[in-house]
Length: 83
Image (cartoon, rainbow, N blue to C red; front, side, top):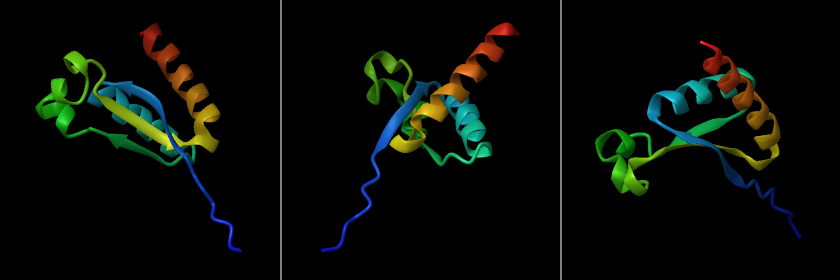
């Protein structure tokens, strides 16, 4: 029997397009594959992808990368808050 590698994708972050894109780039710079979900619809009609258009873009990563991704996001948000 062949065992399949089942990678689960999970949401690491949700926010506006600019925040999500910045986080995607930070994660990828740290060797974490990250993709954006709803990136185009969030700009055209954000209320159609999330209630009230609140935090419409999601950053998706592999579940095995989630812990490191969350640490990097927390570090980024902490530095962004200091400005």
